[in-house]
Length: 125
Image 1 (cartoon, rainbow, N blue to C red):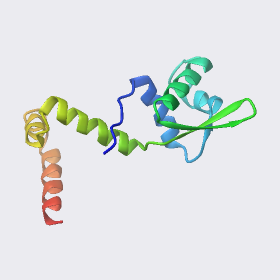
Image 2: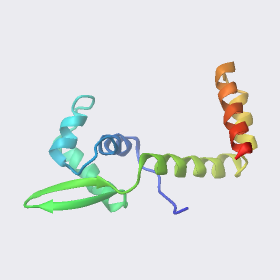
Image 3: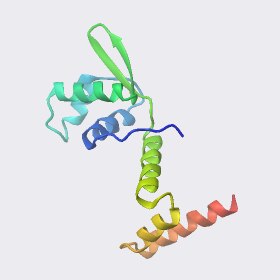
């Protein structure tokens, strides 16, 4: 798997807006979507988009003076890559260690049943 670098929490919030769209979005559209939860300036959003493009997360199309952005990495790909990085860094690659840490936490029986079901279905395939 290609290494996907970690992005900041703020960059992740910008990516969430883009992942929710099925098309390229202009800076103004991203800013408008984020303005419901963040009070970031237009220029701040534009800066995040430029950074994400530079990190290889976004494709950019120019039309006139406006830029439109589209994600090159899906949310699922990003989550999987960051989870794998966490597994390698914190648990030395041991899924057993990760599951043991989760089990020792406040995991309720319903969540444990779901985990067991996931493991059982994986074993059958």
